[in-house]
Amino acid sequence: MALVSAAAVVGLTSSGDSFLLAALLGLVAADIAVAGVGALVAISLTVRYGTSSLAAAAGAQAVLGPGGLVGDPLSAASAWLGALALAFVGPRGVPILAFGFAAGAVVAGPDVASPTDAAVRIAGALGGLAVAWAAARYVPRRVARWSGAGLAALAVCAAAAGRFLV
Amino acid sequence: MSRPVPWPWVALGGAVVAFWIMLAAAGGGVVEGFGLTISLSPAGAAAAAGTALLGGSSAPSRADTLAAALAGMLLLPIAVAVAASGEDARPLVAVLVLVAGLGVTAGGRHRAARLRAVALAGVGTALLGAAVVAADQTGHVLTATGPAFGTPMVAGGALLALAGAGGSVGVPALKPLLVVGLLAGVVSASSVGDLWVPLLVGAAAIGIAAVRPAAAFGLFAIAVAALPGAQPAASLIAAGVIVAIALDRDWAVVATLPGLIAMVETLTLPGPLAPRVIVAGTAIALSVVIASDLFARRTRPRTAQEGSRLATTVDLAALPRAGPRRAERHRIPALVVAAWLLVAPGTWSWAGETRLGDYDAGAGRAVAVAALILVGLACADQFHALRRPTMSG
Image (cartoon, rainbow over all chains, first blue to last red; front, side, top):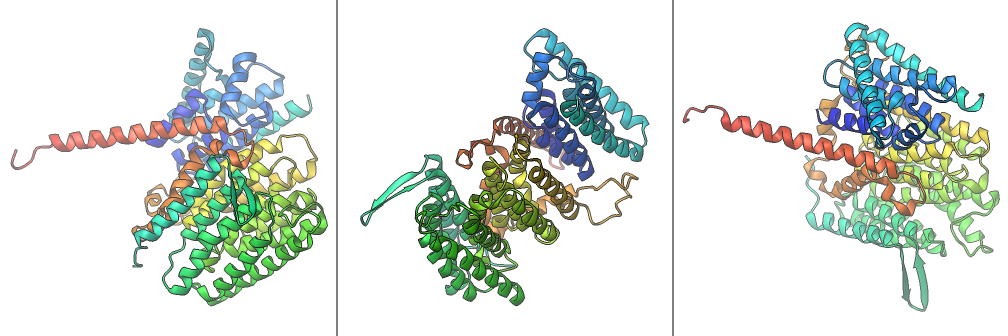
């Protein structure tokens, strides 16, 4: 419960570092493969924003718009792919909170500086929670894990292509 | 069951480490005496703190091991601080010879491991000493200006790091040599060229990752230091390695996480592509090998729990047993430093500009929330225990 709360707070407030969040999510799921998926998503964020800081990513989203909606199509796709990867690998039960909030922070997690930002942030968190819950409930675990790993790898490729090719 | 280390030894080790850390936090200092004026830099004081931490993490049991431990905890840190501050490094070489010599008599658990550690320390000291003594044009400092001096310094540093990283398996008295090796490797790696050091030292790190995780990350720190602008990240990785060896637990390599994150930031800086690809590939290979070897649950088939071959579950229930035992109270200072490094690495300003301020904020928030939840759960347990009906009530 303490680990879930710690990871959920980091994801919900976009404070700290994306690799730290990946490590916390791995601990929450008690699974190194989950930490690996989180690390891949962190790499995609680092490639896109030039830093692994979640606060910097949130700041960029506050200025430019939600990560999944702005920028070139490949970069926006990398945000969606990364968020889906995190939502897919979440285990059942309370840990869903941490994974849902983290997924929301990737695709729509701006720094809360105005009511609009707050609304986007809440919508992102609720959306992430809904997808994570649905994935845990309806997708077989084996499929969800491999899908998460594949989506995370695609997120890295899309972010790299968006940054260096577009 | 081994006897607990006496509290005076624990207190002495803690006091020495605290002194050097406070000196580093204060921005260093100037020492005058015997007609000499020596200015100690914050990085030098921090390196001395690491040396003292390793020196104090051994538990001396006989007179000869006590002499070796005292040399590692009191004498070597002074020489390291002076050399790491850019002053004459020849005293460091002299003390290295003394510590390596004491290591011959100080013993170790296995004869073969002891011989290997002493041989590594001897060759490493010889290489480093030759480079320092020959560098008369630069004032015998521990900084190489070209491949001619840089190559023996990196090779000597790597060997000394391996000798020190043997931990309790090799010769415990040689542990402080790890700091000297990492210091020499990190400060001279960039002088050899940014391709060969990541390639060769990185390959060596991957080669020993499965058997000596901390030593592998030590070599990796030297490889990272070869990249332009990566010395702060390499210093933080080295700090994590030092803490892991001081704790004498393989899982303690998680203390290298802040340094690895700082390294990722460095990889995004402009510069030649090939060495950065090599370093990134080495980091991924090391992480995969060490994570699957160290933290994977060994008591059940990998596919059993989640029905997926990808699942590599962590045995969280075993974590409380992974901490230092009662007899290992001399590791308390190392535990404190490890916690500090993991939660607030951004405050380690003597390592250089690492851009980990945001990491500090998130880690601090996570720890605070986790602590609040734990206290709340403990209070709830206590409350329910009080309300439970008893025979007398």
